[in-house]
Image 1: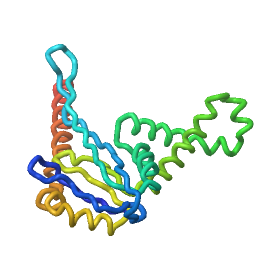
Image 2: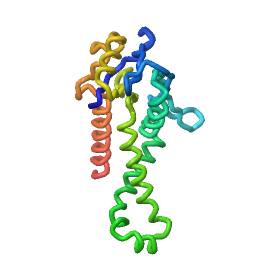
Image 3: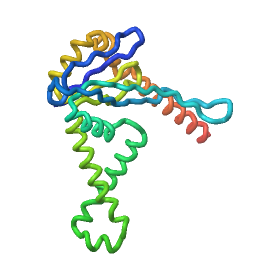
Image 4: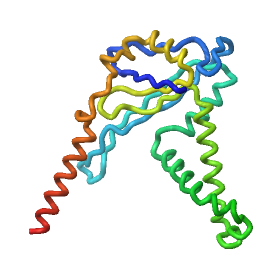
Length: 208
């Protein structure tokens, strides 16, 4: 079962220390550095030229893995990356998979009716299979930033490796720095409340 660890990022914290073994198989031989990337958009604001200015953070995590599993994990993490483009591609795959059932019930007839568009469900199924494989193949993956804190989450497939990581990074993974705020202190909640109040105010003005 996957284990998720919350990690604080701060200039005052020491660099992360990784166990000197492969997070997939535990091997200590033929280790190579594997890098995964995690990004977030911190703010989008209008600028003086009439456009929009976007401020973002990009985090690169480099950790040792055996040569056998390094490329596998890199590809899996790329498929599961939390970027807008890949999120859109995954959504397209899910949509395509929804149309796959009629295709399997009558492929010849459907190909004749829809032509090349009938490949869309097949591509969707292939995409879903790739996502399932990636989730099984990825042994260490940064999953997301906390929207309200300078904290990111890492998912480990091996619980013992995750424990070793915590021990080597006690300060960065301590609950005092990484504990999530309660739901009523989440900024997203209050943003939604403000938007709903604003829409209600506009609706009230329009009714008058």
